[in-house]
Length: 257
Image (cartoon, rainbow, N blue to C red; front, top):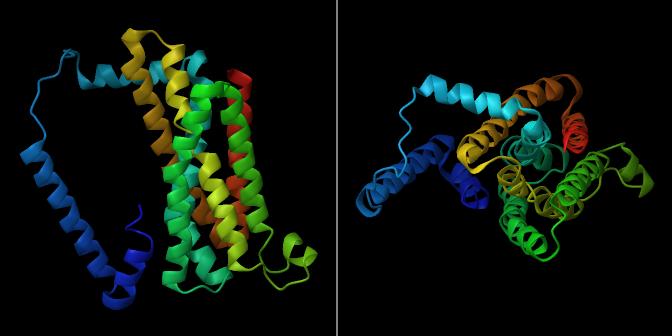
């Protein structure tokens, strides 16, 4: 994630996008070879003899069961918001709306990435000391939605820019909001802890698989839908749409847990 911020921006500026793909491909091959050479080859402790289709049906059944519906709802929007902001719309927002160069935008997205790395550590410390997983998940995701709304409101002729009497809020404003969003949205690993509490040990693996499926299905859906929103209404509307989706997913989470 860190390499895909300023370093990738530098590569693209100097050698083009194609070079970025070649370097990423080479890095993937290097990691694969390292895994093959260094990771011990151990057989599964408990082999599941059922068919892949049967296993997938069990994952979906557990994921749609009432105890997990709230966690599935917040999973559908949580990772989606961070990945789509980080990987899809953060760069265009900072370059097209805030007028930053590609490397400057990469620097700000690098700060966002550092917050995404540090956030789970901070949330984990808080969780071990105080608990309140349900309340922390809800509060942090509502906060992330509010911060996304404030970021959108810093666009030209939007409320925050008008309030401060400027054409557009400076990029430093977005940098602070991105760091705060990164820390807030990083509460999402608590979903795994809550999942383990809500299912018996026999179904833990399938339940966690259902959560993972929801995380990445949500990211795919948000990528597609925000593309339509951007084409029709523009980039500020994308941030507002993401904020609204976060609030809806979090409200459903509270309703079912």
